[in-house]
Image 1 (cartoon, rainbow, N blue to C red):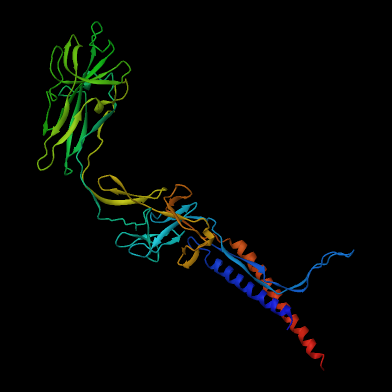
Image 2 (tube, rainbow, N blue to C red):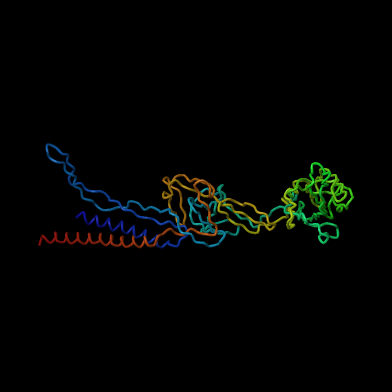
Length: 449
């Protein structure tokens, strides 16, 4: 039988495999995270009719004479180029912008791991992030990520606070004063150990300056003061913190905030002596905590010291001073969550607090085309893919995440249709080789007639 017929058959076979691959690529043109495959051919082997001859005795050398025996599959390789981005705004849809694969598992102990670029995850009834086949997404420690909607945040007691903003230096007109002789009041909400909130009123009185002739050391003639009151119905005060602002000529243990000539806070003072509208004597204040009793809970204790007032200024501009609690909060339940570009699953609780619930893990391989497809947009490692390297998004060679988006297929339809045409013509040409060889054999058989 003529060798060309077998060559034509091998050509039909490899072109059929290539057409199968093209058909699969086109079928998955809209499959999330799909990676197209590419087929390459190789010559099978050649039959040597005559070997090569070396030059000798004046004669030139001769080349070998060989007849090829058809084509075979060189490789079917997966193209791990990045696909296009599809925005979905679904918080559980995630795209890897760069290298890496999501790690998923269907085992209770996550021993058998699979890898995927498809980030179309959703929550099951237990709060696990799963893919459409129910495989759980793993975190950077290899543990299934669970978002427990029943999780709560414990109440925490307030211990520190801060005053920020400005007190108007010129805020002393008659119409500015309230009935209690204060010019400005701000409030501070603090929490006890079970989450009950208490409100502390912080009142500032009139401006008093240092006596230009005899400034209070270490103050200068340009130093200014504002009296401060703290009040709460359940407060246990230290000294006379709740005393009203002192009138001209009075003395007492009221608290004052001292400011320098640039309007910056300097320190807290008390035991002030006022004469002739000037501050003539003060002492550096050592106040201690302001304690609020809270039945059934631990008392609230807020430190009253220089650090509390360090963010306060005394400029000739709008008054906008406010007090905020640095720590302390009421109890809260998990309300929502979001995924960051670094893979952090951050939960937001009803009390406004935030907590990192998990960090999504990624895997990368030295030779990603060496992975084996196992269906369902999943891959498994092979001896030629290399051992998986695990890490967090945005670190090392791992790409960052894009939440609310999906990586689509990397199939190039224009290239696939072009390959389809050349594959069809190649198949057609090989079939012609077979029919032509058959005609030649028929002529050979007809010689007997």
